[in-house]
Image (cartoon, rainbow, N blue to C red; front, side):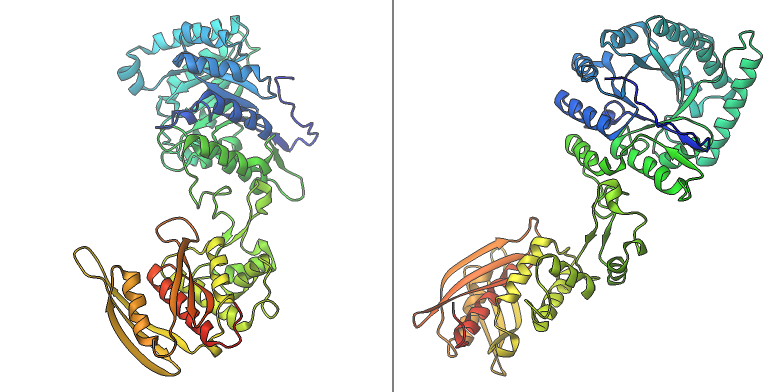
Length: 535
């Protein structure tokens, strides 16, 4: 395959191309506690190529034998994207890039006063000489060079101009401006690029070799203050033609420019509907969600629920007002169709859920109020959902299915003889579990307290003591399941009761296992009392 991704032929001069340089496998892997095995690197590289990135920074070959072999194998995949390796301005590093059979190298050396004095312990003149020698050596070996002045945004502008001028004179192909510790604001980024570009042009115009021009500019923004995407967008506005990104914004400390956020902002916020202006990248945005999940899996870093575009809440709606609007027209509360980034819309059930969203969720499960569900059953489902929401519980689909089974299998309230009014349980270590219940039987209130070997046992004994005169029911089977995972999972209790050879099965759900158990037995008692019940 051609190792250079083809850009679309844009005749309209107002349409600009932006190259995406993905460094998930290099800077992304420098996230604390993240290490991609070779198989993961190969899979991510293939998915990045499918996504449409222009350059994949595959790693730092000199750093270890495993890294060297992984970078080499990525190159052997023969992808459409350019495969690049990171290298210090040192001969050994550059040779490792050459030995990996790469065509592209990302050379860097620190230039700020802090780094010169405390890390490199080198003078300005020494650094300029190293820059020239390294780029020249890389070019002599046929490499396309991208040069970064590490900590550029804390480097004196005059000296930064000198460094980049030396890089241009040495025939670098790209100049990258790293905001290494994420200290720029968009306005500062704007001024830096304007002033740097002006200074470089002046230097080149004064140079005897006047054939030289400022090469393509690139930026590498860190997210220490949450401004990486904003600063990258500003850089693009100022003429930068390439931006370094990572999937999910992973990277050292607070990470890097998030690829999904950057590209989606350009595609959906910058492009005008009339087509008079636009930005072109090769990114297939509908694949963003899948690759986000893939990198999350291999990095063991969960995607924040509220992460823009790819988070599970990015297109989720709970508020009744919002869900009503979304049901009528999704654009009322969504900026774009979630399918455009590979995500999907979710209607979340909780205490803010409205009847419209609950009905829609039920319809998705094949239940229509007035047909398979009575209004009374629907009202009970709504009450249960909101009760769970009031206790801080998110009602997942599995929870909802358990609630539906519970409600639809119950004797209608209008036919119920026995209803629970109150339940209190005392339990703990070195305490005998004790339960008190208050039950309404045919309009009369009865109370009882009993002890047991556990809270469920004590509660069911208390219940038995007050309903024993109404119906003699023997508990012959008791099972409990969690509808979902987690300590706040909805408990799904099923019981079998026997009375005079009649056996009934009853269910109940609640986030409280004791409550669910008592309600299941009461439901079974009502089923035994209901002559029309056929089990």
